[in-house]
Image (cartoon, rainbow, N blue to C red; front, side):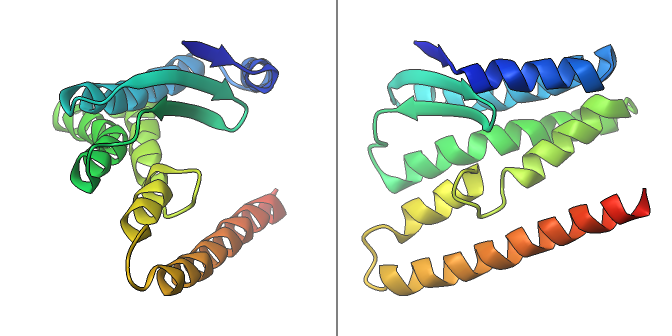
Length: 162
């Protein structure tokens, strides 16, 4: 089942208002490849896809819990891996452009250890049930705070240039 939130429609309206057709097509191709990477890994590991949720904040795949940590990690890493593979293939063919750049950005960005991203979900999954889970989560919170501050700082610096 696919669940489309109103916020996803708002996001699309903004995308169509501020981006050209090539950027929109590249963006959707990169996102689709990313999610198909997750779904393919989920199927290959015997997982069960329950639903896909589309919102302003991204795409969320809801699946039955992974049978083990290794399978869960494979599913989480497969989306960014698909993006990085596309970037490498396009680069190897000498076909750069927006799709390659967006694919690299999506692959790297989704590996960040932020809770709503694949990298954060992986770290959360690896920390769960560990002897020092509380300490690991405190460290992750600190890393996430530093990352958020860095990202906001970069955005502010770019905005100040204009």
